[in-house]
Length: 566
Image 1 (tube, rainbow, N blue to C red):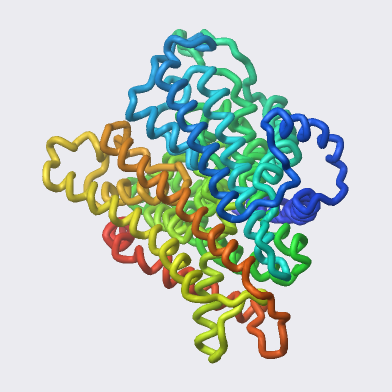
Image 2 (cartoon, helix red, strand yellow):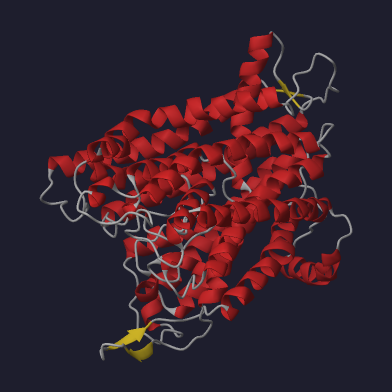
């Protein structure tokens, strides 16, 4: 037990230690200061020249959003075309068929919005061409889009008044060339040397120890796994994701992949402090996020290591923990740690089956996505947190009888309206979708019997988890849900679109409004937002608005299932 707990402590500690210098590097790159990666500048200028882009031109917040939405529309149409025709395109040695329009719609949107919800099995659902030019491509650019949007908000929080908030294309390209590509290459090399395939050959025939003949799927796996973790994407090359021994062969690869999926979200928090020269502010943000993370991690590790009491009553030894749906090479503690990191990070990769986790573990994983503000995805994690900061500043200002201000900029009605809309959109998408699915199932359980492998409390949790994962841009799932149907493909696709772009549009709009306002230097009477007191205020705002909104639904699902076991 001690060695398992020590293992996850080392993973988290090492991630934070790596994130601090990476945060400094990110701030250096986005400010345009000199750095070791300046040798890539000629390549970036070539890309800008080819695209007819002036990367030195400042853009307003409206221009940033127009650029973001336009290129995303182009990527969506491109992805749909490839997925619907992959069966007749090259690089398809296993002859995988083209996707149906509804599945292609869901898949294209899912990877476009950095969610990577997969209603197909990777090795049989996609050709190598689709894996590389659609899936892997979108995993890079969707992550870079989130990082670029985050820097726009950083610019708005600077001292002074400014209409221009940098250049979206400059931040986007630098995120690719100077951050994602180099680190992904390092991660992929580790995976290759540990046994992860990197080939365009088709399935490998194999004779098992029993003498049976089978075929093992392979492909350009290492490259995709590296960016799926680093970009907090999560889509697996194989259906079993990082529980598959070829995606995650050893405990070392398990550690490296976990470093990768948490690294940039934490680094972006420290980058905030370096970028604005407000280190205490980044410490406050990191402290609140870490407190939420640990509160979700502790019960998950405990219950997974304790084992399942229902199975224990049958005489099964639970010394190794609740090992159903887990890999023995990784263990219960590492599986529980990954389950929480990938759900608070909105990554969605899994190294065990969440459908087999204990009810409280499943609830903690859902709460990580429901709050959607503890580290979060690359870039967008801070955008979600920024919304709660706006609300906390407004409430705190009213409590002390002062006009609410954030870093010298007044928070007024327009900013609050946008923040509240964004904050309430998340529970609306999740609870509205779950209510609709539950109504359909209860009204005609015979027709929709294929949806739920586990009716009752757990079946409700499966539906709740699916919409939570879609709304949080996560992508993991309770795989007892039969989700490759027109209903689930289209309904979650709509949730994916609204839950990705509105929470990006909202914070960027708030940032643009704040940047235009008169800057007032902080004084003795100013509400400081870089203190532990304000951090506590933000923490409770997150839990009251985000977490408590879901308590009735959680009571019907994982909590009811938990008490039925005891």
